[in-house]
Image 1 (cartoon, each protein chain N blue to C red):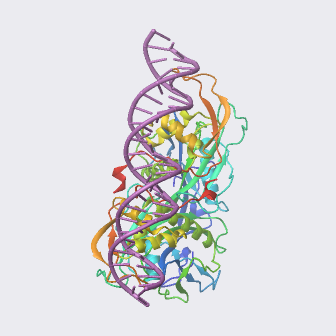
Image 2 (cartoon, helix red, strand yellow):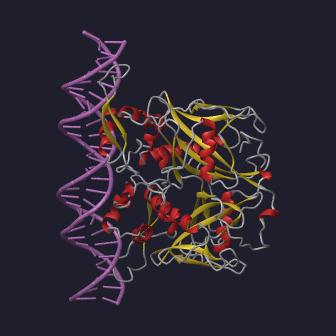
Image 3 (cartoon, rainbow over the protein chains, first blue to last red):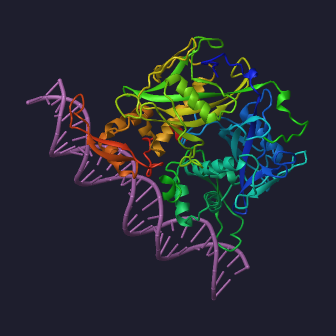
Length: 278
Length: 278
DNA sequence: AAAATAGTGTCTATAAGACACTATGTT
DNA sequence: AACATAGTGTCTTATAGACACTATTTT
């Protein structure tokens, strides 16, 4: 920022150029399994490898905007910045924007819903891109259902890949993805963002499915149910129920929508985690 | 990262140059009050204004290294990367390095201790620096005591400023500082990082002073005491006590050092916060 | 002696989790 | 009929916080 320096006055133009990119870790849940949006690279380096969607920031474009644009380019969903919390809340993350899918304001069958996107971290190790110095600002996005990914207009392909069957990734994207997953798991504890994975309305069971997919552990149905309803503002009733019972039986479930809470209190903590404490 | 593009092939060199800087929000506690390290700018823009210490990243230098270097340049303490947790923990932050003061391995009176430094967030709004496009990667540092700030060799001055008496800051540094403070407050809940503000050894009262300074609320001495000791690995006894009682009376306090926990479980949650929940 | 502080004891309200159970839907 | 699921009741244990209290040290 300030060009204070011990030696000469630092003119960035005197240095080899630095490129700034934005990479997006977009997560969604398909068939009860957590998936991440990946693109297949068409050109070297790492041609043929899968990578996180991303690209260079453009002149006049804020970082958040760049992330939203990149996500939109891959998913086809047009997104717009809805707001940014002044000073990050709770477990204090940084910039967070909420993007809402437009085009189909009807909350019908398909796309429906909001996409949550927030900044994750930046990566700038020399050599992480063999071509030049690249600093990547990564973003984390939670998407409901699957706005079926469409390949960019270049030669590459885009797809939602289960995190249980990840291919080798290009660059340091595996590390970025690891950070993103840990962040996502933590966010579900303190925020109502699990609802961003669900549709406009959802059952408590579906919400539990989100937690189980992201955390990778089974949760006790009864206790989860009571707990969710006991957290003020997490969900609010629609008064509706599902049309029918579950595919393998059971009564119709009540439908809820996201409540107005920005933080969950008390939080839904992940069961144990001895290992991670020390 | 990947040069996928809808239109032409994007060559970053075809764009106006982007500069990447690192800004550090270094916090310490002086006389029971939270202070932040600021430098007075010697040149336009914002000449005469206070700003966060920072500067351009250098070729071959990782972002973490740049942050450590910037901090060292202002505080005079030489720091070195000690380690980085693979996948961030708990409330899931990203890169985290622990820098330890060298030079005086003796844990005597003065400097002593470890400096914790971790990446906070990046800021890249167009126009945030009037000169050119600048993306700033900000860092948050917790420092024990005060390695008395020394001005850089340029015309500017450096000082620890109480967060209760902040001057107007240059650029968007006030926003960065706000994010940093919120992050710091949250980190104290889930991690043992409060010990990074204390010396090599400390009393429970001193530790409580850290929490009170950062959170800005008084805490119940008795309950805090019992709670800290009940969290596994937060602190460990040295078997020693202070030489004398407090300045205004009271028995000698037992001395502790930081324990081996990386996360606090159960966490020390801030009292209430109704407002922030909705 | 008075005042401040370190540290402990105790009680209450809340929350987490284990478990059991009813009701309602499916195949 | 058998089975899966939605949702509720109950019990045990852990935790947060209020409050009281003793012991030790300084002024």
